[in-house]
Length: 181
Length: 393
Image (cartoon, rainbow over all chains, first blue to last red):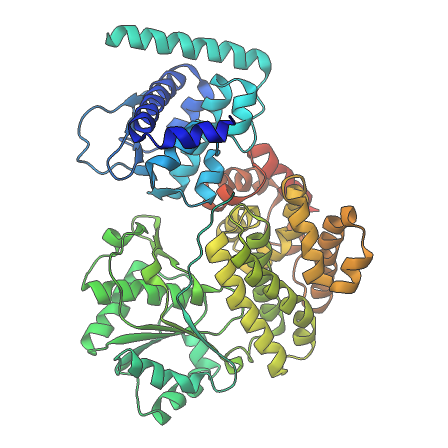
């Protein structure tokens, strides 16, 4: 059975798809938070957002999703309340299946955007900045063959820097998880 | 299997006596008191006369005329325009002009239709939820394609921002492509606006959202521009040639509003904003350098351009692996011919307005431009810098 056939079979079970998308967005949001605490380049990018900036990655019509907020120290933090307020930037998958395709690396984010599977609501310059953060984050934490599927082009990061930062991100991710529990 | 969307509900009236169809089309939309929106330049060259005559002969009059649209419009201008619409009890808008007039009209139509005082709640993607008042566009340049696009940008100088609008409801009901309206365009603007249209078509054909339907519009537009541009620059009074270019601009507009554009626009927008170089000239300038940069990701599509640029004979004689470079060479040849005729710049230094030390700033600014998302090849700071450096000399 090919990967695509497996995917088609799973798509017949929406609760599994929803669970997977929920898990991946949860992992991503916590991973980006950890990356923003460890990686200087990501912090420089976050610094370009205005104070109080919030970004939401959401699956229409009612989730799963995630929301992050810029902190005064130019890091990103998870938002857990105040969802009634419109975020500065919203990136929305039009359908759960579209999120599934991207988060199982069958369709990279750039292709999904070009194929109109996602909507951006907010300042485009902020969206481009957020894409650069996501690209760098994925390049750091994903194994190269997976990163090559997820990205238009894997950013050039020296191997030593990549290993060091990835280790720091995973360590921070674990520490943050322990602190929450 | 890929996926694509294509949308263009604009009725196009094109060719001889196209203006004379307007009264009937207005009535069919139950509109009888149109507001004419234009600028002083259009009025001065006498382009309003045939429009007003066509309307009066058809038994209608403009209820009011707003001719104060500046080259770079603002929320204040839009508010004034909407106020005149209300005061004059208008029921539709007819825009006669270029990009700024058309964008102002689109935004004024929002305020008029929604009976609103502020544009802010309608800014962004898909913020409009219902159809607007009947809206007709008569372009006076053959380049922007705004008559068939669903976007508008309006400056808010007090807050130092530009408000973007994107919605299918912004699309005009009718676009009127009448060769009389572009006859007075001087050769250098004819060349620059046509190269703007050429870039719309080439980027639509080579960028990430390309699809078979937009490819059909883009390829036809490239062919029309290649076959007619130099002839029209040499013979500005040739009505048929003018009409071919005007149609090409509309077709390129339909193509790029569905397939989007890429790095040529990302870089061109910055040079326009920072160094005040004409948009069409920026497009012409960057086109070959960006195609060279995109060869790795979009080589086959760039190779296909040769057929539309140089015709079947040259295409057939050129071995397939050489076609992408031959297509870029054809664009360079066209630019050289335009430079010889009317000094359309081919490099940043030839513009006389860009300073070399501005290149790093331009590269940094380009990374925040939304069109970059649709470029087939990824672009990071060093990549943008590289293309700008190549475009300097």
